[in-house]
Every structure is written in C-alpha cells, then in structure tokens.
Amino acid sequence: MKSIIQTSLVIFILLALNSCVKDKPKNHHTCPAPLVINLTSVVANQPLELQNGLYNDYLGRYYKVELLKFYLSNWTLEKQSGELISIDQINLFDFSLEEAQNLETEIDTGTYVNLHFSIGLDSITNLSDPAEFESTHPLSIAQNTYWTWASKYKFFMLEGRIDTSGGWEPNQIFSYHTGFNDSYREVSIPLNNLYLDTTGDSLQLTLDLDKLINGDMGTVDFVATPASHSLDEVAETISNNLVSSFSIY
Image (cartoon, rainbow, N blue to C red; front, side, top):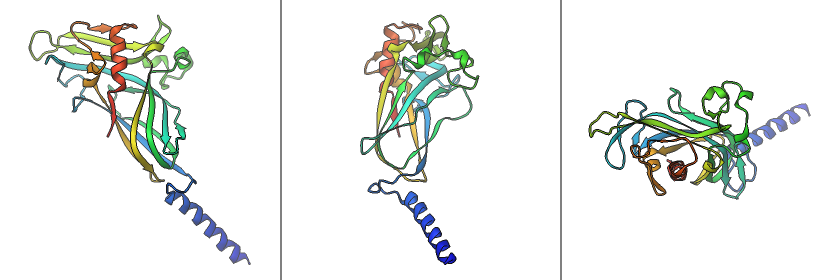
C-alpha cells in the first residue's frame, strides 16, 4: 500500500512539472517564465559609443554623445487573450555605466502580442522625495536625476557636443533634459505573438537616437537650440519623437 502511495505521488509531481514545461497556448495553466529585456542604443544602425563615437546630424555635422540617461516605467505585457501582465518596475537606464542595460523579470508562460511601457514617471511617482530612497534605488537623489528647483525628476537626459566649424572635432555643447508631467509618454510595441515557455526568452529593445533628433514629430537642431531644461518646444519634440524611436528586434 505504501509503495502505491509513493508511486502515485511521483506520478503526480511529474505530471505537474510536465504541465509547466509543455504549457501550450490551449492549456490555461501557466507557470513562471524568465524574461530579459536588453536595452541598446544606436544612431541610424550604428552602435552608440559614448565619448568617442562620431555621428552625423540631419545636416551632416559631426556630433558625439557624452550622456544618455532616462527612465522607463510601468512595464506591461499584453497576452493574446488581452490580459495585461504588469511587471511594475521603474528602471533608470544609464549608458555611461559599464554593465549591460537590462530588465530581468519573471512572468507567466503564454503568448504575448504587445509590450507597453512609459517614458518618464507618472504624475504620482514624479512627486516622490528622492531623499527617501536608498542610494542604489532608481529614484534616489544619488542618481542625479532630480530637479531640486522644480521638485520634479528629469525623465530623459541627452548631452554631447557638435562641430560648428565644418570639421571633425565637436566643439559646441548641447544639453537636453526633459521632465514635468507633460513630457510623460506611453509606448506600445508589437511582439508578433511571442510565445514564452518555462525556458524563457530575451528581447532586444533598441533606441535609435537618429529618429529622436530627426523624427516624424520634428527636428532637434543641436546648433540652433543647443539646450532645453524646461517644458518648451524642443522638449516637446524630443518627447514626441521618443515614442517612435524604440523598436524590438
């Protein structure tokens, strides 16, 4: 009798494990699946290299990027059924750091059709006090992403230099910091029916700076308007262009 019970228990465990491994779309049973979103940045298909990389703006002038730092938040994955799975993370991506810019999470197995996220912070989070967070937290004062004078966070930061002499040496500084609630944008990207089983998967999310500075919603001229640290026309152009500057490969 004891051996029968033990055998039945082993069969039950194997069936439970097998249901997680197989987890086909027709099976409503779900199990955890690891998912990694790798964030990269390019300039018109050229990998972004801070400090040393030279790129051309829309007029062919050479420029380089010295700082690229921004918040992405409110991550949600949409299932084929329409169900929304919230990852519920705030991520500060800083391309001056040596480590890879990744988001690692665990979600249900199944078929996913869209990735949703936001650029910046929602109006409630934007009221946070950065002094209340530990130094390693994305919202900490140590991240240097807070406008003390405005009591708001900087959502997107792009700094560098552009050549104004017709040569190869970028000499004029440009600096753009967006923030304020009006700069908050939501992004949706198709996943082409991404199916996740328990082995998980990884996605490459890419930001193209060329689409940011010369996009469908306008052009950012590093020479004519070299700075924006407020809610002005340049900040609006950057915020609007950012929405279509992300893609998944």
